[in-house]
Length: 253
Picture 1 (tube, helix red, strand yellow):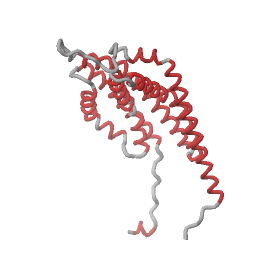
Picture 2 (cartoon, helix red, strand yellow):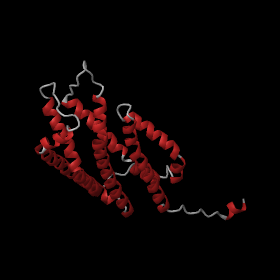
Picture 3 (cartoon, helix red, strand yellow):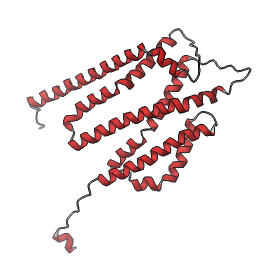
Picture 4 (cartoon, one colour):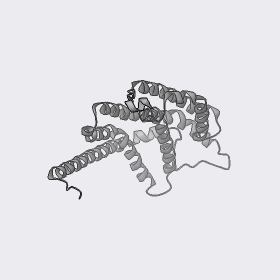
């Protein structure tokens, strides 16, 4: 028969639940506070976001209000991300070994920094060129009339894509620690990676402009080279597998 959980186990379980509840409430409070701050400065934020396209229109009664709340919420998540990361770390800390704590902190902070770099790069290097190219398809009979919601959706999807693309070194580091990939594999597949990166750059970048495709591909290639370096460093740090001693019967065989 299965053993019944004792009272101490029940108390420990409810303590973890209470701790998790506290961490979630703190994270939600941080997002709410940062979203309120972002909404207060929303006019300045909108001036920066809409600079590549100029004036926009809204085609429904609630569109302008709802999209403004959406922008404030996205900005609040970005600003509150360090607080949420800290809460996750504090919750997982008792179950982590010292080495795992170090790698967790480095990995999460690196991921956050790279995501911000990807968002900044995408907004200042790709969005203006992409908007200019897409608007160039207009003519005397086709006048661009861009809605507020569609433009923000376009920019948000593009920036999230670049933020995820900049996670390549972190993903490679994680796969290297799991033993799934090695620096030798990354080095040997460099030529294939260049082709794939340029193909993806052509898909991500709007329009047939070669300059914008190269602008997207170059930092991705740079991230790939950084990923090789990170993989080599972690691969050297990995402990060697202990050799299994053969027993006398195995030696005889």
